[in-house]
Length: 180
View 1 (cartoon, rainbow, N blue to C red):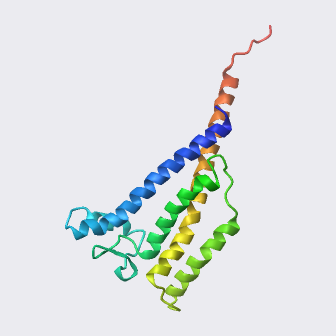
View 2: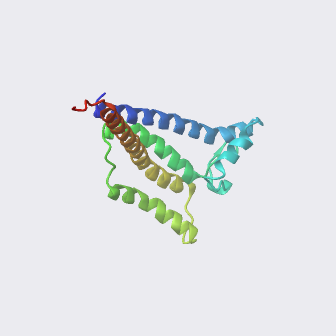
View 3: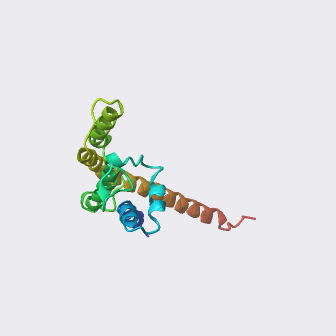
C-alpha cells in the first residue's frame, strides 16, 4: 500500500471517529436537560461528566425544557463550532494533506474568545450568552483542522517508522553466504 493511500485512509478513519465522538458529545450536552426535565435517570451522570470541562453556571447557559444545558453557552459554541468545522474539513483539506493550517489563522480566530474571556474574568464587561456562543463557534470551527491533521500526522509518522523498522528487520534477517 502506498504511503499516500495509507495517509488518506488514516485521516479518513480519524475524521470518522472524531465525527462520531462530537455527535455523541453534543447529544449528551442537550440530552442532560432533556432527561432532567422528564425525571429520567442519567441526567445527573451526564452533568457530572461535563463538570470537569465546564463551570456549568446556569446563568451563563442555554436552557432546554426549563433546565440548563450540561455546558455553558461558550463551551456549547466551541463544540458546535467543532462540529461545523468537521463538516467543512473534507471540502477545505481533503484527506491527504498533513500540513497544519498557518498559526496566523489560529491566532486570528482565537483573539475574540481570548479577549472576551479575559474581559469577563477581569470584570471589564459581562458578555451575553449569544455572544459567548458566537465566539465559541468561531474558535471551535478551526479546531478540527488542527486536531485531525495533528492526529493524522502522528499516526502516519508511526506507520512510516513501523514500516521502516520492518524493512530494516527483514534486511538484517536475510541469511548471507559467508565466503570460504
